[in-house]
Length: 168
Image 1: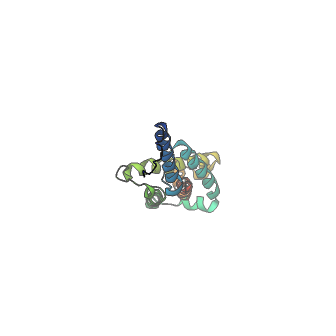
Image 2: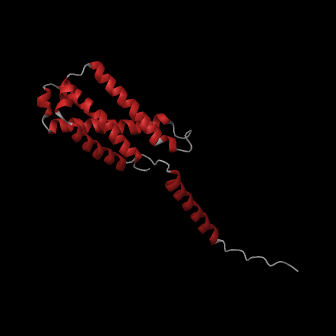
């Protein structure tokens, strides 16, 4: 006796099945693998708000006095430490979640995020210095730059962490 075979599904089922399979893969990548997405304007706005919040919170008299007394070596060291910490944040909070790293070089991945985060933070900090009339306290452009770099260190680290970790 011959075993009955199931009827063949219509051809249009294959299209729906492929589409469903693709959508399940996208959900798997987005929810379970937590792959980082491209750095977008939304991320830039998040960095802007985070930098604004943290910059306002760290302005105080002691930090201003310390910033005014910084030497060139201190300023270079602050920028270097900020660069290292932001690079570590970018690597561990975003880049490690990419499957095919050979297709996305770290230098390109890093540059877009680093210059956006640090650039926005420096701009926000400088704007707040002039907004609160701290340039009068500083006395010169060189001192304004010192205050901007000194106060942008903690705010850029915090803004970077909030922008990069929001997906996780």
